[in-house]
Length: 264
Length: 212
Image (cartoon, rainbow over all chains, first blue to last red; front, side):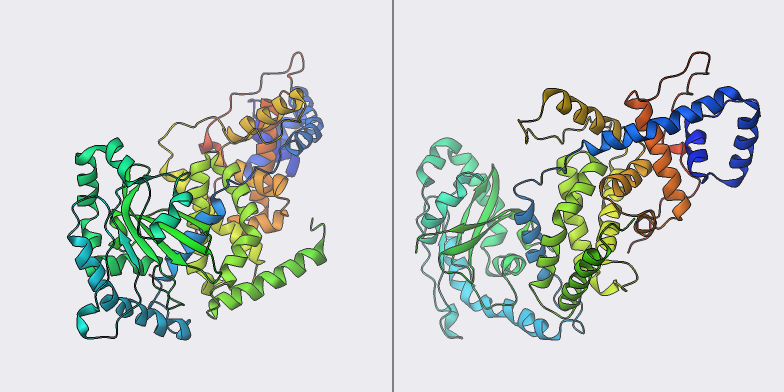
C-alpha cells in the first residue's frame, strides 16, 4: 500500500473499528510510513481540543411556540385515531364515535345561518337543529374576514367570544372586497354542516363533550382561516385553534394554536 | 458511560409508566412524556438538521410517530433511547427529502446570551458550522454521543447499527472537526490531508432506516 492514509482511515485506526481489510492494510502502511504515524499522533493529540470545542456549544434554545405546536398536533391526532385502535382505547372510542354525531344537529343552524353571510359581521343565532333533537348548546359564529396574526389574535379572542370580532372594519379597508370575497369563497366548504362538523372533529377534544365557544370565519397571516375557540377545564382560559380551508380533509389544516386567558 | 445510572433509571421508570398509561388510554400521559423530553428532542433535531423550521417539523413528526407507535414499544431500550430513535429517523427522513437542496449555514444560534465574551461566541459559531459541515451520519453520531451524552451502546440502539460503526462515525466526525477547527496542522514534510470526500465515504453499512 503506497497511498498515504486519509483522515477517515486515521480516525478508524484510533478506535480500531475500521472494516477488517482496511484495518490490515492501514496497519501495514502505518508500520512503514513515518509521515502517517506522525499524522496519527497529531490527530490523537487534537481530540481533547475537539472535545473542548464541542463543550462550548450551548443547548439550543427551544422556540417559544414549539410546546404549543406539539400540543396542537397531538390534540389533532386524537381525532383521526378514533376507531383505528379500539382494542387499545375501549373507553375513548365510544365517546369519539359519539362526538361527531353529537354536534351535527347542533351545527346545522349555525352553518345554515353562516351560509347567508356575504361579508361583514354576522352573529348566528343557532336554530334548534331541525327540531329532531333537544336544542344543542349555542356558540357564537361570526364572519369577520379579519386577517389575524400571532400578535393580534389573543386580544381579539374576547370579541370573537362575544360574536363581535374587533377589526372587521379595518380588515375590510386593508384587504379590499375582492380579497375578502376570495377568503370567504375558500372557506365555503366549512360553512356546510357536514364540512364544519368534519373540521371540528379535528380540533375538538373527543374525550369531552365540549362544543366550541365561538368560531370566526376569518384569515390568519393572509390565509383564509377558521378561528375556533374552545373551552378548557379552567375558567377564563380558552384554546384557540386556527385552521385553514382544508380543515375538513383527513389531515387537519392547522395553522396555529394558542391558549389564552380571557377575563370572565 | 452512564454517569448517573440510578437517576436515569428512575427517570426511565417514570417514562415507562407514562407510556403505559398512554397506551391504556390516559389522554394526559403522552403530553407529559413530550414535556419531559421535548428539549432533548429539539436539541437533537436542530443539531442534525440545522434549519430551525425543519427541526421543528421533525420534532412534530417524531411526536406523532411516537404517539401512534406507542404500542410497539417493547421495553428493550429506555424510553428516552426509543424517543431519540424516533427523532433521528424523522430527521433523516427530512434530510433525505431535502438532500437536493444546498446546505445552509447553521442559523441556530439565537442571540440568547449577550453576556458571552466576543471570542467565545465566535468559537461557538465556528464549532456549529464545523458540526453542520459533517456528513449527516457522522454528525448524528457526534451529536448523540458527544453532545447528548448517550453511551456508544445507546447510540448503537438509536441508530440500529453495530457499536463499532458508532465508534467509527464518531471518530471520523471528530477528526473532521479537528481539521475544520484548525486543531490539526500538517507538520512539515507530512503529506497534506487528502481532501475530504462526501457522505459516500462513510461506513459500508447503510443507515438504519428501520422504524422503531
